[in-house]
Length: 133
Picture: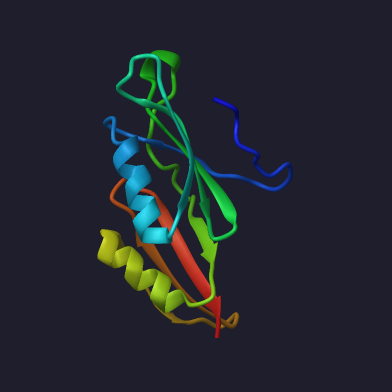
């Protein structure tokens, strides 16, 4: 399989999903954040995902299952939030909640001029969603 064309600049988050749930996470991110599946590569064991790529809101998200035998384990690092700057924070936030995210900080008008809120996805990763007021 050819590697899909990805951005050559910028930052692309690459998240690890615990308990062999990367396939589930892939489908969740497609629903919650309107992701477009670009690739999914199975691992040699046929059970786990080596890597999957999604386009989200004109950016990229890569994900993988854990591979403890390679020293690659999951767990969102403390202090990390995946941020989505969108056209309508309320609509994106509500869709994510309907898909299964939990509210960490409700969407509200912020002093810096955005509507902004934070969510936690079912895999423990935190998301910030913002739009200009």
